[in-house]
Each structure stands twice: as structure tokens, then as C-alpha cells.
Image (cartoon, rainbow, N blue to C red; front, side, top):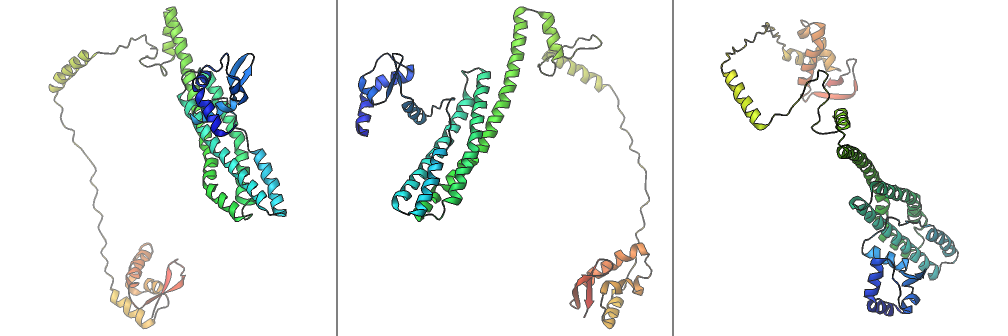
Length: 364
């Protein structure tokens, strides 16, 4: 049967095929549909072939939770085999076979990434399943994704390392798909994180649902003593629930009218209270006297010129203009003068430091 004839057969029996798709099986079909492998007979019932269902579900983005991702072992082994043959006998047949296997693997990468996206989207929006079933499906998907990691890395490495330089046509093909394959491999980590996050959130929801079921059962049984006990022991989880009082006090929530009345009463009371402003007293501290010592910079410069100082900072410290300073102040004052003098054209820096860890400057 040609492809065009298959399309015409599907079009002619479109209503019947659609009914089988929606009902999962039907009582009878034309033998021509069975011969074309669109249908398969099981226990006197006719069901659509799984291959056709996979094709339709993929196109319609209706991915089943029971989907099996599989791996790439078959194509990978074939690639290794035909690479050896091509190295021994480099002809177009082996090269074309390698290109076809690369394209098949790329289609698998593409389809797997798309299937996982659709599964996660359906998982997060599913409302018809019980929470326990959703958790089981999520864990199954997570397990299957983990199985893909090693296979993805193995194939990706083979593409990047072992097939490069084999043939310019093969290199061109690998170059065109390389970025996308790397993207599909990197997506795996994101999918794992997304599923783990969904599992944690669903487990929390399951716990909350159990608590609600427990409380609803008490309400339906009108067991007030158990309800009271549950609420008082669950004040952190149940809204508008008061913690048990040790002094047998009763706490009530005032309504808006009580709050308005309370505001008016407080306003009247506070208006009649004479509150004197507090005097702020603070300790008065004597202002420290600023030391005003004047250094004659010109005397220092004249001496540096005459001595042709080999270390300007050392010469400043030893100069008589700074003899009046204490040891605790001497370094600081000398450094100020040093910084001022370094702007002079006569200063040249050397690639060493003196004992004060200051860069040596020379007067030339």
C-alpha cells in the first residue's frame, strides 16, 4: 500500500476510527483496516494499533503517563559499527547510513524532550486522578528521566568527540543539530527539579486533605468534644483558632461597631490627659582642642634638594621640622608631607619599599 492510499483509507473510515479512538475498542471493522495494521483484533474486539495511537497522541499532544522513554542503545551500537566500517572502507553507503542513524537519534532527542514537557504539563494540570496516583506517576516519570541521563551523555559525547572529523558532510550535520542536542540534555536537570518540586507540593496537599477529612468526619459525627480538642491542639494550622488558655479565659473577636465605640472612648479619655513633654538631658562634653602645628614645607624641600635624598619619607621623618611631634603622631604627619611632595616633578619612585612599608621615592 502506498502512502497516498493509506491517507485515503483513513479519510474514508474517519468516523469509525475516531469512534474507536474515543471508546478504546469497537465490535467490528472492515478487514481492509486490519490488513493495513490500523486495527488489531483482541478477544473478539477491535482496537486501534498502538503505533497509530502513539502517532496520534504525539501530534495531538496527548501523552499518556505510562509512556516509556526508552534509550538510544540500538542506534548507538549501529553508529559504532558503521564508523569502524567507514574507516576501513570510506564509501557513500556507510556515510549515508551514519547520517541516517544520527538523524534517527536526533529525532529521539527531540521527541523525548517534547514528551517529557507534555507529561509534566499534564501532571501539573491533572485533576481527575487521586493524589496518591499522581504521586506514583510523578515518581515513575522521575525514574525514567534518571535512566535517560547516562544515555544522553553517552550519545552526546560520541557526537562531539568520536564522529567529528570523520567526513565533512557528517561534520556539517552534527554542527546543525549540536546546539539543540546540548539544549535537550541540559533540560533534563530542569525537568528533574520540576518533578521534585511537584512531588513535595503534592505531598503537602495530601497531608492537608487528610487533615480536612479528619475534621469533616468529626463535624458530620457532631462530636463536639473531639472538634474542640482538635482545634485547640492545632492552633498553628487552623485559622481563627485560639490557643488553649491556662487561666480559663474566653477570647472573642469584636465586630466593627465595638471597634468604633472603643476608638471614641479612647479619644475622649486621651484628650483629658495632660502629658508634659519630657526634658531631654544629656551629658555635655568639652570640645577637644585641635592641635594646630605648622610645618615649614619649604625648609624640607630645600634640604631634599641639597641632599638629593635617596628615600624622601625617611628624610622627612628625620627632619627638624617634625622633631616637635610625638612618636605616635610622627608617622602620620610625615606621610601627609610625603603625599604632598610626591606631586613634584623631581620625585621618582623605585620598585622597593622601606622599613615603614612605604614605596621609596627619590629626589632627583
